Image 1 (tube, rainbow, N blue to C red):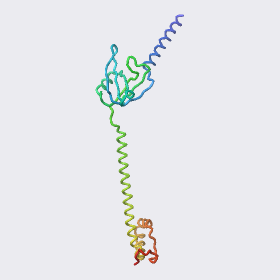
Image 2 (cartoon, one colour):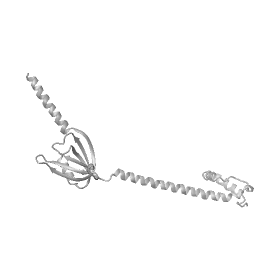
Image 3 (spheres, helix red, strand yellow):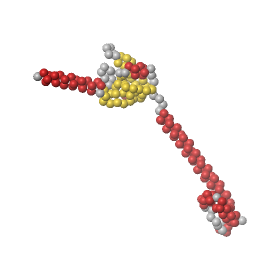
Image 4 (cartoon, helix red, strand yellow):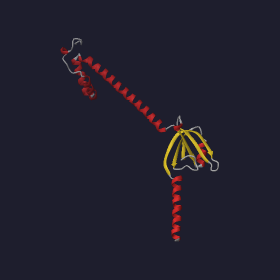
Length: 199
């Protein structure tokens, strides 16, 4: 009989303990918010709690109410009132004795995102490299155009053209390959159009 009563009492207090833990201490979600810390105050008639407001933009829907249990954390945040901060919170089923269900567990000042800055720097660097590559291509095309123009002046003198072509083939195979891009074949001067003077 005594064992039954003891078990009942233990079971009852166990259920109460589980209920209190789930309701007040168990975190049902975690997250973070970024915004301007517009208000932070210590309030309460009997049990004092730190309550704050974070403005994430314009309008009531972009305002977050939160609480802070940690006294040290609250004092740190208090010094940043009016500034942009990032808060990390845990949501509980009940906020009591706090005013809200959101309890801030850590925070840091909002600093310009270094990753974004680095990405922007990389983007600018890539654009600069692309511009340099484009200039190289244009420069290469211009050089090739001048080279081909020079060859074009030699085409009218087939003997000179053949000598230059043979010399280039012997001395500079790379340049000889470039000559093929100019499309100046060996032709008979009699086959040249009337606008091109023959030697």
